[in-house]
Amino acid sequence: MSSQQPLDVINAFLKVMETNNIDQAVQFVSDDLVYVNVPFGFEAGTVHGPDGMRSVLEPAFANVIRNEFIIKTVSVDGDTVFLERLDRHQLPNGWAELPVIGVFKVTHGKISEWCDYFDMSVFVAQMEAAS
Image (cartoon, rainbow, N blue to C red; front, top):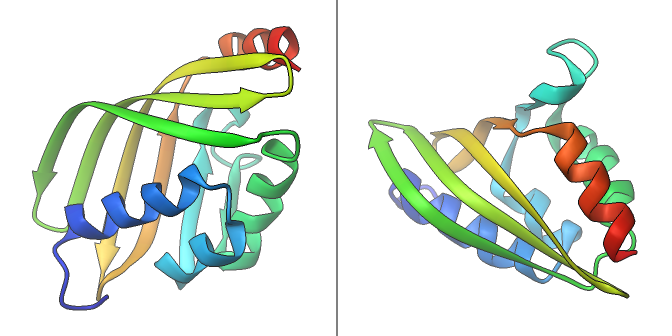
């Protein structure tokens, strides 16, 4: 992956995440990844490395059948990728949709920083309605 451009790395990562394959997804992140879910707060919402990412994503997507990431806006500045996206999660009783702004930094072909901004109340309401 090291020869890929940052946007290529992010697109490949999201493609894997659409299948909810966390084992394959962690291969796209660096050992020193810093992953922040801003609605939880910068301290409480920050995890490190592939295992930290797994600890957040596995429970969050436990009931998810598949994901869709609809990209609305992309901006790339060097090794940093900004995405405005609509995250869609198929659950047993329907779809949950969440507008998200994601900021990724890619270092040596791997995601080294990932910060997602979203409204937690929208996430909770959508997940409850569709589960």
